[in-house]
Image (cartoon, rainbow, N blue to C red; front, side, top):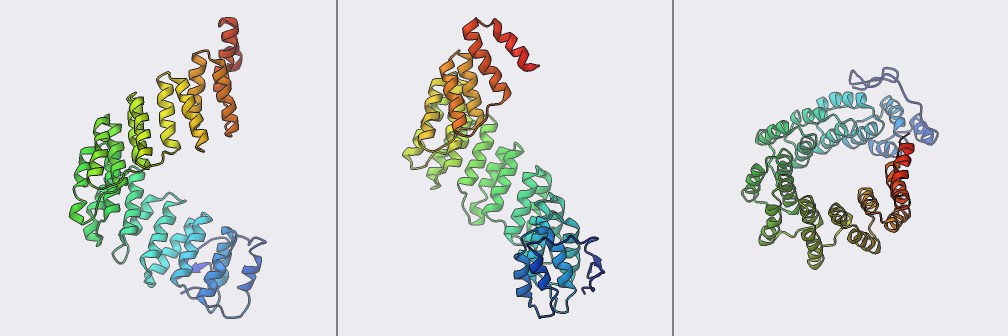
Length: 380
């Protein structure tokens, strides 16, 4: 039961302690609720979703719940939770959750909105998990997978494992997405071999691994220094009829870069094009950084120029590496080119970069002794 205005309660549970004043742009919508004309739940929901500022949500709720025609339908409550989350009002969401779910049988979609709201922007993974576990009916795979992924992203690997094992008791049938999340979690924990065992479960569930699955496995292999195995998985993908996308190639190119195998990384990039997979900024940045780390700054510059022609923008880290490489080689012209290209692409050189540039220019002209003095001035 909803009490009259002034109590600030929903079903006997305090919903809010203080109302936020409506914004000017929402005044018309809120004033509509003061009229005595009958509002259907659908009309009320439309008014709620039309609010331009989340802070008006509490005022809307107060006015609407005091009306005789108030009826808390699922679309209305779903919109209300979404608006309250946008306004960072956790308390009202908790009260709404407690009061309405005890008396109304809402669908999985409402609970999915709840767990998303607790996770973003409140970052309350614990509330998302407890909501999932206390649902009055089996959650959908979508809601289950969302919470499972939250746990993995938060590196709560033990909790993620426990939740996965509880899937049958919760009435959830794991799908390909569930297994992908589990693979990602195991790889992030350094248990790559265990992740490969999960790969064998896809067939048992009647689903197939996809490029996302292989990308996670390859990343885990590369992080363990098992780059050769990651490269070999490209052939395994082809044999399984799974097309490698740019994310897969980027993982392998990055792994090759960390081992100093830049030529192989560049060859893999060219092979992507032959397979009809378009490299992206991440692919090129890995190659640029690898070339810079190998002291091959002129070649790295050529890759950056190629990126510009193809509409890609190098990362700040790639530019920083180029500046450092050209400075260490005393190549002032190259430094000037990098700085100009950075500015044209919207980057602003930082103090550390300017220190390198000033020392490079001064050292070339003064055999290095002034560079040390300049460095001291910049540090002061």
